Image (cartoon, rainbow, N blue to C red; front, side):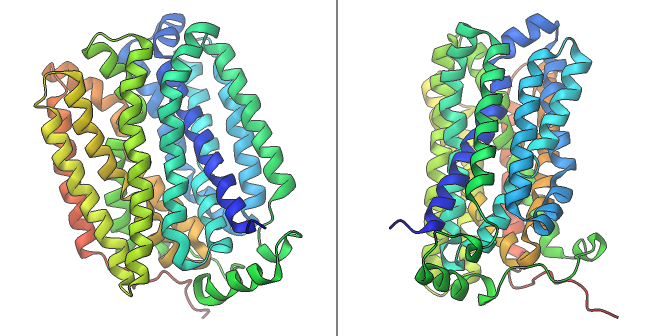
Amino acid sequence: MIPKRYLVVCATFLLSVLLYVDRVCVSTAKGQITHDLGLTDTQFGWVMSSFAIGYALFQTPSGMLADKLGARKILTAIVASWSIFTGLSAVAWNYGSMLVIRFLFGAGEAGAFPGMARTVYSWIPTQERGLVKGINFSGSRLGAAFALPVLGITVESLGWKLTFAILMVIGCGWSLAWWLWFRDDPSEHNGISAQELAYIRANRQGGAAPPVSGRLPLGHMFRSSSLWLMMTQYLFSNFTAFFCLTWLYPHIKGTYNLSAGGAGLYAMVPLLCGAAGNIFSGWLVDRIYASGHRHLSRKLPAIAGFLLTAVGMIISVQQTSVGPAVFWLSVAVFGVDMILSPSWSFCIDIGGQHAGQVSGTMNMAGNIGSAIIGPAFPFLLHLTGSADVFFYLIAVFSVLAALCWVVVDPSRKIAPPSPA
């Protein structure tokens, strides 16, 4: 019989795929959306940033709700809500309405990864978390990778409005299935074996049951220097990640005069490499952890990943044709996605029973970076006439992010304050 925790991982993997399919659909529909709504590139950049702003602002609150209400309720609600706003995007009639709808879409998506973090805390033994987080995040890259060419063709064939409506129906279907099948604690799931339940209880964090004991006040949480370093490096990482999910497709299509299908195929390569980086890093995290180097299992993969990103970005701008440029961008994305598993494993480690709140706060900072990139890329492109400055800045920020990992202390957990 397949262990139930493996099925949980499959479900969250599919959620991660769906999350990014819905996220990149607006990028593949850029041409039709800007034409129908009369948007400039700068306005379209703000449309993408409005998603990131809503996504960032609701990270910590949604993480707190995941810790309080459980992943079953929170993931059911947020997947249904973001799916509805995906569909409502098709009824936007001007720039302002699209800004509001995409902001609400971002707010709806905000609880996804904090909810998954809470799921991992409750269901997954500590020694398996690196690979599990790698698998989950690989789903996001695979979803985006295959969505770019598939949605590009679908949008051209069916139109962007019908495509968005279809995605809404798929998301609501996942939401219903999750509510019917998942349970917040393994002990509440009728299909789990006694052997697997005992194994999970003995090996998840502290070997204890996961209910939350006491609030984690925001003021107390923000006193953690480890959390601030995680927030900083994650902000820098999202400069690269959000560019790949938003501007990479139109950048490649316009720079090299490619068709929609051709641009989608090239744009999917870095994302596929990102998926590989996630799985490799997750495996590496667990391998180093199993060797007895718990702290290094979080730090070394992330440091190596950021240095790869810096190298890939610098060399990519020196290429004159699409193939070599995409190859080195793929190296950069492989590197930046190596930081996801250690980052989220680190937050689950230091957050414990408040894993959703802590990881959500880190993700909030990361998506402030996403909000910056939306308008920053076209601004720098217009200001300098090329994308080179943007890529060099990404390389610098990646080195600074690696330094965050050098100094962070994984042993400093965030615990609720003791009662007076």
